[in-house]
Length: 246
Length: 159
Image (cartoon, rainbow over all chains, first blue to last red; front, top):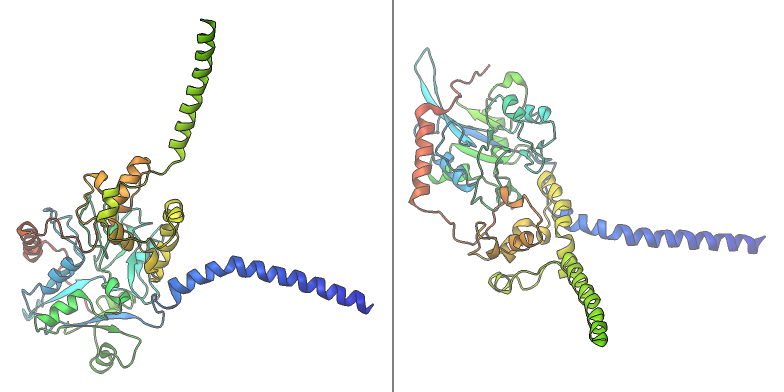
């Protein structure tokens, strides 16, 4: 009996051992791949990147952020302004009663509940774990539903073949694109965007980039202390781009 | 005469066989890039063994692109920009595929790829091709047209 048992055990051990060895062999490359590719870097789901824009500091006629964004991402005019891509634009507001004017930059608002993601038939429009809303151009079919769905008109469609794109910013005909919150800079850990850098460089300091979920970040502290306005807050999209002074 | 004919009869099948063998070799062969392309590129050692990367580079790129795009998990060894930076000569042009590391081989093997419809076909440190007054003028015009009220957002209601 005991010998039978021990034989059984040893057979079981042999089989389990063999199975483990095989599993180790087959899983190891995959696990290794994920570890090198993923664990160390990648979008952190604990973070939510956002922008705070103080319109009282945003100078009328200044287009430093627009220029910086478009240069950073290789967006340029094809001479047809009605279809040229706009990742960020300056909007001028006039209050009807008082005539008070101010101007502010408007770009993709990186909503927590983005309508562009809801309507995308191929899931090409998606929200990253760290809250950045992007278009996966590998799967975008250019249907432009997202452009219709976006209440901020933040997205542009590329109508013509492009050349000389930036290495970090692939762009091409037949796909939709918008502000990426300089995701290449975020992934490099620079903690800033081209528009914010340009605004600071010009001395206006109207824009702050940071992690909304980090209570110690400048943007979170200012939002808590001073408050802010979400454009079209009635839609309850909870945008990550917030404004002051509108 | 009879002997000559026998010789001819042997030579013909031999020629046919040789031709067939050559054709088959040509079918399965991946043409390596021209030596001048390799010399101009910076990379002396690829991230994977040459036979692996020749056979599977498309699988590697396809497999990891969603990880990179959707989750931001980038593997610097298997980055598309990394391939171009290392292998493509700074003077290569997509207009002349024979000068371009990727396109030369793809053209020879008649495999169409879409990568360069969106991704840049030039290494990061290559001099920008049309970085001149033309571009400055076009940016200025773009911004001027935006400032002239081309933008359609007129008012933002703030409840």
